[in-house]
Each structure stands twice: as structure tokens, then as C-alpha cells.
Length: 443
Image (cartoon, rainbow, N blue to C red):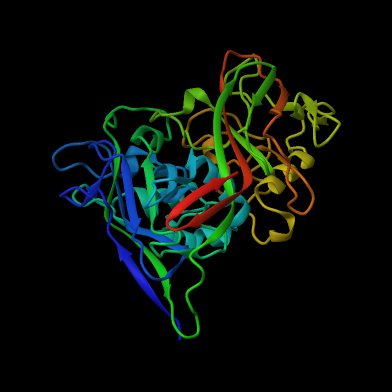
């Protein structure tokens, strides 16, 4: 009879203090699931530890309190701190999957896979997520006194194509072998921000992780589960991430993906000026802003074309948004939102959402204030959710982009000199073939 073992693994690169801090020189977190006789269920991988944040970097740093108004993106919680997630083969060091801008990916992904009840319930306990800005500040960021920092325990899962495939990983030395999980941490200034846009007294604000370890479940071979052949293939949907910026009314984005089976692509936006600064939320997924009259006023997207080799594809028509018909309407065009949702999750997996007309409308601006009703920091139901998406093929058939460019044309009311950061995530089928300890990736 097969049995399961629950494994607890310490980080490969833990300092003597046991604390990981980007500001203090430890930007990488790495775990190794060693080769062994058993099958790993990658969906059981969880990173456990404690989180604390401080407003300075003294020998005994000062905890954050209510008057400081320092916070993080409340929908992301602990995922704020992850810049990239990489999965490697332990034996060959082959990169099986690497998702850069992981926190931006998770902001859109969480809005499509969790309800507000999830976020205030089990995700609040395990991932430090809250659907409300004030509740997040009180429960995660602020300390009751200046003597002891608020320390929050977490145990978060790692959604990715490789780890969420539903397949088991053969950890034997002559099969797939062991796994290396690497997480590059975000700079402190791209995680923490002040709700009033001020940096006085918080120039050295930083976060700290401690008591870290990784847990997972490994099934051992037995009479009821004989060892499979050491030769096989591991199929999954890999996520490829790209970044660019646009700064014109008519923006053209073109990339040679080199992928043979692209399932979908989606993108989210944030002003470049908001990235990596303590004054703005660089993790938010907002609409274009800078309509010519003010940098803080929205500049809505009016027309979208998805292209393949410079030709409209898969739709041979333009997506003309409802802004063209009524510039004063605050509701976002439903077709744009539907395409965005479909690109992240297939329609047959729809179960929970936290995207709604309340947090995906145009009834806000990009001002920074803790009290302003129209500030993007105060959007209800978890904060702004917005993006563009496209799905290819029917029933997961996908599309070949090895010889033709992926492209998107975006027309908007962006008339100010205000570059917008564009985070693009492409979902494609991939296969890892393994034999005698050798691993080969085909995409």
C-alpha cells in the first residue's frame, strides 16, 4: 500500500539570523526538493513563515503604526514580495518554468480565482490577503505599540503552470529527479507605499521574512502503487511573461514569442511613474491615465486589435469600447472584461470571482490620498481589476506563434507624456520529456 510523507524543507540560502530581507542583502529565496524514491504532488508545495514590516532600518527597527499610513496591495498580501518564480530541474539545472513579474500575474489571477469571502477567510489566514484596504492595514501592517512589530504567519501556495498541472513529478534519480524552487524578492519600495504619497520618515521602510520553510507531500511506492517507468513526459501550461511600456494614443506592441501552442495572452497596466516608489502602489492593475488635462485623470482605451503576423487574429474585427459611444459612462465595456477573464481561466473552470462592476469601472482617478473617495487606493472589493486578454483555439487547441509575431494595437485617450507599463503574460502548452535523469523542454 502506498503511503504519503509530509516533507518540511529549509531554504538553501538562509542567513545566520534566519531572516530574509531585500534591504539587508538577501534578495533570493531558494528551496530544493531532493531526488528520492517517490512521486511529488506539486500542488501541495507551500512556503511557510512569518512576515513583518518596519518604517526604518535601525539596529532595532521601528514597527509601523496607524499614523505612518504605510501599507501594501491588499489583494496580493504576501504575494507582494515575489518578483519572479522559477522552477528548475535539480540534476541538469534546466529551467522548467520562469514567471517574471509574478506579483502582477497574481493580482489578476487572484481576482479570477477567489471570492471576497475567500479573501477575508482562508486566504486572509494563509496568504495575508484582505478585500478591504483598512482591514488589511489593521490586521497585517500596523502594530499596536512601537515596541513590538506585528508579526503575521503565512503558508502560501504557488500557482504556476508547472506546479498546478495536476500531474505528479517522479523524483527518482533516473527519472525526472529533484526540483529547485527559486523566488526573487521584490525591492522594498515596490512592495510598501504610503497612502498619502509622502516619504517623510519612511525612507528606509522595509519588510522581513523569518522562520521560513517549504512543505510538500511525497507519495512512496508500494504494492498498490508500483514504481512507473523512469521514462516519461510531464505536460503543463507554462506562463511566459513580458514587459514593455507605451506612451501614445495609438500604441503598437509586437513580440516574436517562439511558442508552438499558445492558449491565451493577457496584460495589465500601471503608470511607470508608480513602479518602485514608496509613494504609489506599483502593484495595482489600473487603466491608462493622462488624458491631456491631468496625469491623474483616466485615459480610457477606445479600440483594441489583437494581431498575428500583423493581421487581425483571432477576431477579424476591432473591439471598439463603450467609451466611443458614451465618454461619460463609468462601466467598462463588458466584452473587454469577458475576454480578459477568459484569457486567465477557461470558462468551464468559473467558480469564484472578485471582479465586479464595483472594482472594474472608470469611476476613479490616480490621485494619492488615504481619504479621497475617488483615489485608486480606495476602490472597494479589493481594489482595481482591469486588463486586456485574448484566447486562441477551441477546446485548448492553441495557436502556433513560432514563425509569426504576436501583436496588439491599443487606441486610447492617452494624450499626456505619461508612459504606461504593460505586463504581458502568455499561456502556452509545454512538455518536459525525461529519461535516465536527463530532462528536455519542448514549447
